[in-house]
Image (cartoon, rainbow, N blue to C red; front, side):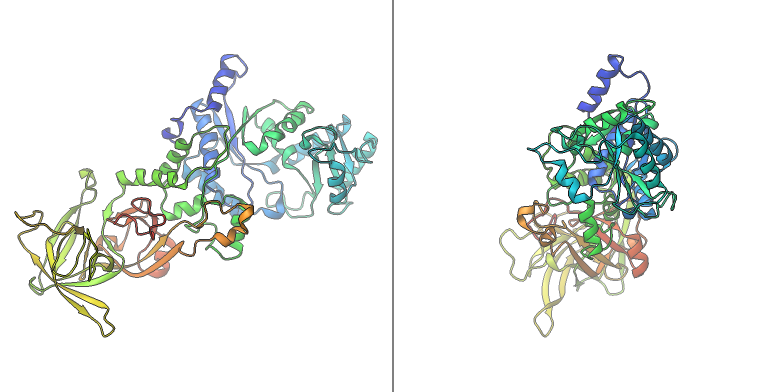
Length: 562
C-alpha cells in the first residue's frame, strides 16, 4: 500500500496508539483482509483494503490476506483469482502466502470438540423453522432447545457422526450454549457447524461439515496472531460472540475487534448477491463490466489505484453511517488524471471538413504538447491537410445565443492549428449535413491577428491519417439515487437505459493506433478514456471506454466538458 494511504489519521489509529502507550499491545500490529470468495470485490471492499493494509503499514506491521471460504456452494477459484488480482492492483502487499479459513478446518474441528467437552456446545436437531421459533424476537426471549442438555458424551459422538457423514443436510447442527434469554440475538445459542455435502475448492470432499463465520473468524484471527480485527458496523452486535468464542477456547491470543462504518455510495449497489444477479440475468457484461462498482470493473473503465486510494482517504474512517456522493469518487478520478493523463483528440461523431483554399495533395505537421502543463511529457505530432474531421456536435445551422463553436459564416480555431470559417454546407437528399466547406487563414497558426475573434476552439483530426476507433460512453448504472431502497421496488427497475452508448466510426489521432494501456487519455473537450485491451483485440481497432467526463455532467445528457 503506497504512502498516500497513510495520510488520514482516523479513530482506529488513535485506539491502537493509546493501547500501545498503555502497554496493552507490545508486539507488532497484525491486521487481515478476509473476503469471502463468492463474488468480485467492489468499492466498499476498497475502503477495507486501504484501512487494513494502511493500518499495518502505519505501525510497521503486517496484513494477511485470508479467504473466508466456509461456504463451498457459493465459492470458486475464479473469485479467488480475481480478488488476489484486485488487492495487488490496489496496492495491498500481504504477509506471506495467501491464507484460507479452510487451512484451519482441522483445528476448528478440534476447538469445536473442546467446546463440547467443556459443556459449551451441543448438537441440536431442530429444523430451521423450529429454530427460528425457539430463538424468539427482539422483544421476546428465546427458549432452550429440547436438545440443549444432552450429555457431553452424546454430543461428542453425534458431532463425530456428523463429520463421518451419517446425517443429511440440515438434519443436525452444532450450537454454542450461551444464553437464549440474551437481548443480543447473536448470543442465543448460535450455530457453529452445519452439514453441507459440497465439494470444496481447497479441501475437495474431505469435509461434509463446515464451520459458520462467527466461529471461524475469531479462531482464524487468533491462530494467525491478528492484533486488530477491523470489521464494518454490521458486525458490532457480533462482537460479544467473537469475544465469547475466544474466551472459551485455548487459543494463543485474543485479537481486538473494532468496527467502522461501511461505504455506501448513492446511485450504486454493493451487495454481492445483487451484483451477481446483474451478471446472471445479463443486465451487465460480467463482473468486470465498466459500469459495475467492482474493482475489476473500475480498473477496466480506467480508474487508477491512486485515485481510489485518494477517494478512500477523502471519505475517512469513522463510526457514523451515511451515504457518500458518488461525485466524490468521480472527483478523485479527475484530480488524479488531470495531472498525468496524456492529451489527444478524438472526433466521436465525424463530419467532413474540406478546406477549399488549402492546396490539394499537400499537408503539414503540427506539434502539440502531450500535456499542456507538463513539458516533461513531451510532444505529439498531428497532420494538417485539406480534409479534416470535426465533431458533428460542434456545428449548428442555427446557433443558439453564446454559441462558441462552428456555424455558417462563423470562424473557430482548431486546437493547435489554424482559424477557419465555414463558407458552405453540403447536404444529402434528406437534408442532413454531410460536409462543411471552409476557408482557413494561414496567418493564424498560434496567433490571433488584431481584430480577429474566432468563435471558440474545437478539436479535430486529419482525414488522411486519423485512425478509426469505437467509443463506449459509460455512465452511471442506476438512475435512482437509492436503487437499493425497498420502498421503491426491485433495484433492476432503476437501471439507467443510457448507462452505455456505443459510438462506432469515431476518429482518433494516428498515435492512438496502438494506445497505451496503463493510463487513460484525456480526449480534449470530451473526457478521460481508457483503451479496453480485450475489446481492442477482438475488434481489430482501438476501443476506448469513457472513464469519467471532464466535469460532472449527470442530468446533462452525459456530454461532459464542452
